[in-house]
Length: 360
Ligand code: ADP
Ligand code: MG
Image 1 (spheres, rainbow, N blue to C red):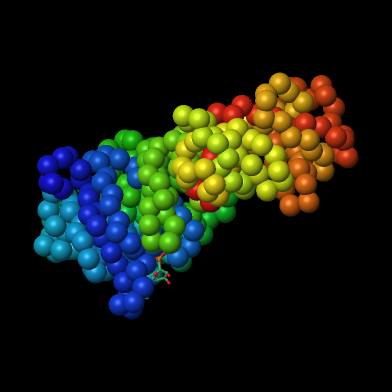
Image 2 (tube, rainbow, N blue to C red):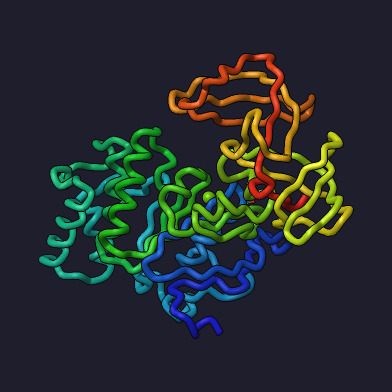
């Protein structure tokens, strides 16, 4: 069945155990399209790097199959796979110049000297590093080294590039700039990218689709907007963006609307997304910008303003529902006519469609 569609990379029922006891990748099924920018996002230890290493051929799957361009990956020797790679710790050869570093993958592929020079020149232009061709890596800044690593991964025109936390060592400003550059190169070259990061904002801004990993499993595979607007479970709701949550029990189900009795004895109406039958535990999730102050919706709770933080374009309010529950609410700077004060009693309300009933 796997070869019957146009998926470029396929993980099919892939498992990985390093010690023969515990699975660090559990029954992974993932199809990546040609030209796609797919990000594996998840906390440290969730199995992202292991998946990338299996795809690159540096680790083998304990179970299942990985297909690359319709063929099982283990039948193709590494240098014939046409896969470029970039890692967090650059891994440039320290004794070689920038030019020699870039030429190396071409020599391995038996490209003649004239063509090598041409390709190295083009790759350096691509990352705006032409004048550094004779420098050694130690004579470059972190950001420049990472640019060279990027150029080296692309110099042989690979069909697929794997990037494992490539910007993790850079400061915020440079990281954001490089995100933009990588995204541009992806668009320009049309190359398929599998990108690994633990940084959710990086994943959301760069990717066509994101696979959210936790504990060796994909929790949700979706577009960035899909993950934020329609998280399928409590882990994804909490991991992506900012989230307010309440726990409770399902009291009543009416088509896709559920009534939930919260731990504070509130009755809240919510959208049925991924919760069990009447009586089961559930987590309610509401995004900060979907909560309104002193407004009309029927889901209403009384609360206390605890902290106000000025952010220029919006005010972040920390609102106490009770001793155990605090909500974050964002109010756009244009409607602060209500002039909130710390200690003030207010009501919070929201549209029941913006409150998602998820797994416990
Ligand atoms: P991530 O990249 O998401 O941080 P990894 O794939 O590196 O996660 O690791 C997943 C799990 O596998 C972790 O528990 C890690 O300790 C374990 N692990 C990774 N590499 C090895 C290895 N070579 N030998 C044994 N255990 C490993
Ligand atoms: Mg990793």
